Length: 191
Image 1 (cartoon, rainbow, N blue to C red):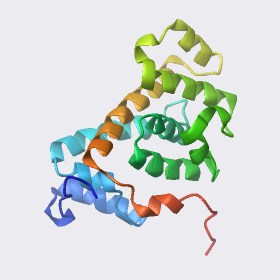
Image 2: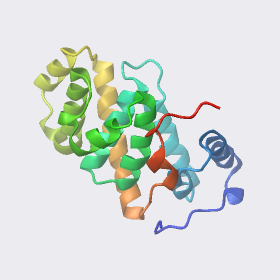
Image 3: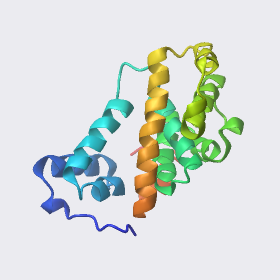
Image 4: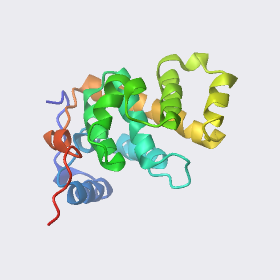
């Protein structure tokens, strides 16, 4: 249970309530992060505006799966249970690989991913753990895999943003919604 009580959806500002209800309609539940951060509306708006700018950007050389892979891998390095479970679920869905989230969370170097993705995660982990040691050779390694400088900015931005998110989730005691654990592990039944 979170250390900070979530506000009631009915008590939220109209714009935040509308977005949360939209997410609930699409997902079938309200991810805990939406409610936990809603206790401070200005911060909620800023957080989700930056989240969306990074994660929903359409003119990026990173796929949605790549972005979620960065989040899952670096969140594991930061020991963030909420983000590993929640973003791991989304990663499994985007990549259509039920094992990939567990693999990258434990050891991305042994995961069933491409060499390009491995290079991306090598860089993300360096940003996560040793950003002060980034050098030109790190950029050259990514360029060799087809990443341009804007893609590299995206990798670093996602890593840095979720470093903030990981710390907020961990300190607040935010727990993953139970629904996340099963998502993407078995194919959806066709109705």
